[in-house]
View (cartoon, rainbow, N blue to C red):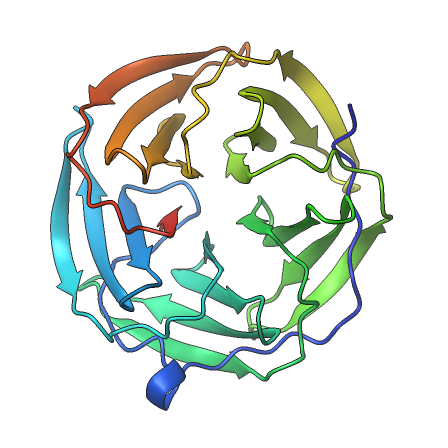
Length: 267
């Protein structure tokens, strides 16, 4: 199985104003591995900023009402420096937003329609201000970078067929690791990325090892991973150790979460 990547040279744009706005919401955002979590529902444009404590209790910190966000975001990922990248596959537009300590969200850079390739199905932040873009339809990808001025650029292009095409969730973890997950088979891979942007499989997780109903997976602080199922409203807080073994830390029963979340990201 390959987890290789490649990317498209399409421009990157994002804006969220008026009907399409990400609207200013609040959520405290720091590093990619953090104690805050942003939940977003595309059907209504609503969201919630939550916190998770050391005992893995999750609670709402700020509720963002219906219409607070644009409804076309298909990928949202927390970046370093209290920033958030919003991406719309339908238009190729995007926004780089910010979040302050009081959980206020603001648009920082609007990236216009057509700036991004429109086939990205997963986008996740990695270490050193890098971003991984992945296309399930072609198995291609790109490793991009974002600088302090919020400019995005391609760092490495990974050709079609380099990645397996069944990954439905990809999330960055601590120590330059990446978790790939396939809902269709319940399989996964823990990969690594080095300073030269080479990707490698570190641990292969066989078919059936994961539940197959996870619709969102995101890395959190302290080597934790949040798994969420939209079909049941259930979840799990998992942990990953230095040997890349994943275990359940806290099971969150069916109905505990709202079932309309389409994007969840650590902030």
